[in-house]
Image (cartoon, rainbow, N blue to C red; front, side):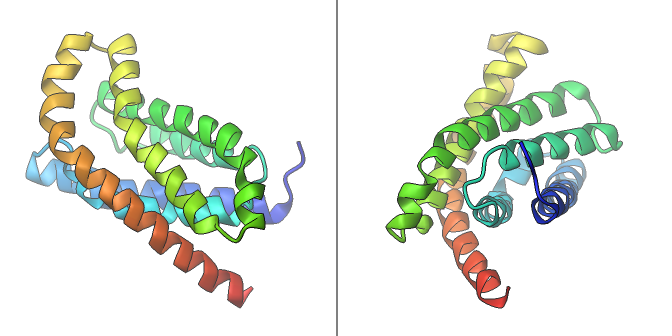
Length: 189
């Protein structure tokens, strides 16, 4: 696997940007408000950032998983989290999703690109990512940190029953807006 300097720079920049976004729109508001899952209201900002980065990689393998792994590493090394049980499962869920997107969605990237339908490709990747992120978080959290019943009762039902529809709508909007941003950036470069 050979990654050129441009892709390596993009991986580092987008991973760092996602860490800053997570701290500013998830950790700080959640700590101040005391409302678990408060940051999920801002899924659209994550979705736009992820959409632009996925499109910038142009369907090349291992860029998405490298970006997500670097994000997870930066986030766990830097002291932003109050408890490992609250941080590690979502990060692992993100890595599982990124691996799936890297393998499955990048395999069909060329199909969408040839038909000038990259907008639909990025919307589908965002729908998959945000639609399955909470399920992976629940499964990985219950396997590694707490019982399934506890995770389901105290996190999944109260937070995800309300936020999952919002996250899906924001994923579609974020995918669309990310595509528009990507097209603007593509015209400039």
